[in-house]
Image (cartoon, rainbow, N blue to C red; front, side, top):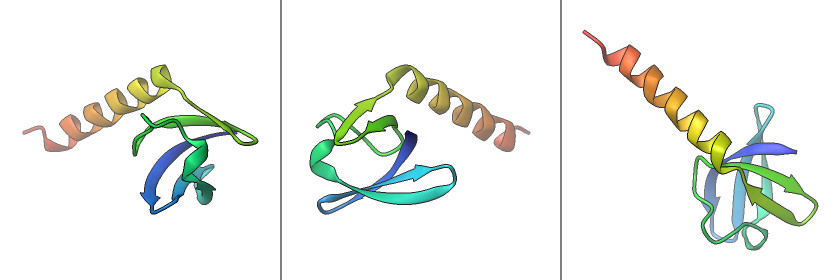
Length: 70
């Protein structure tokens, strides 16, 4: 399953999946995982999807530019 890291709370990673949040043990996430990263979760393995994360960040930046445009 794919999701977006919403936040870290102590030993818990909160991930948004299909519009709802789910808690996972932080220890299964790679050390470089950050809030906002797109991740693929398969059992107790988590992979950061760097290309999808970068695409999402660019989309968000564009939306912010559109909102703040004069």
